[in-house]
Length: 168
Image 1 (cartoon, rainbow, N blue to C red):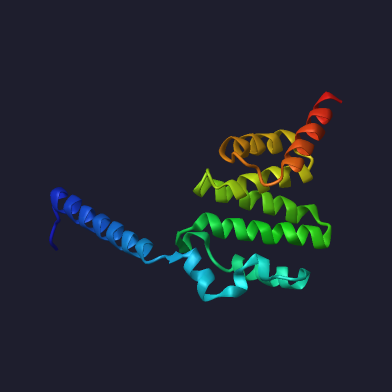
Image 2 (image 1 turned 60 degrees about the horizontal axis):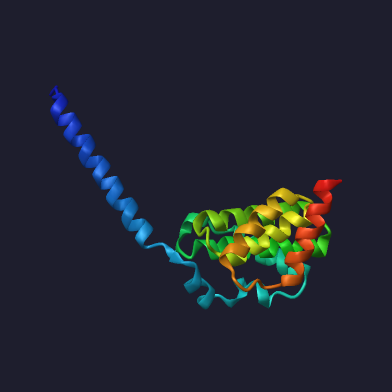
């Protein structure tokens, strides 16, 4: 039986580690660009969905992907999944879907903290969940980044309602 020296073991472990890192980097570089997936499969566009059964199908389709599948534009994947959950919460009047929607906006912002659509929707979703502090947090960041807010009336309404809730 041959005895492997400590130096040989360390060298072998380093080689294995390097190989695994190389394979992992290669697999990551071969990941999917979410925008490319959208071009190939138009059924994953949130705006093409019409009713609650379509949204349920979209959610199942998007949930079938592991988020780390996407090497590019992962924030858009989370945004789309969040918007699908948001739509389901409206159709089904179920706040659990709203919570899932808000969580997906958080994931989107973890990937791209400057994605203003996710900031805006995170503010709205937390507002609908009666979480004014969180809503104001995302709204403040959104307003700093977006010089011309999407809906000035809603920004004003959120600020007013949340300020009256905090004074009560």
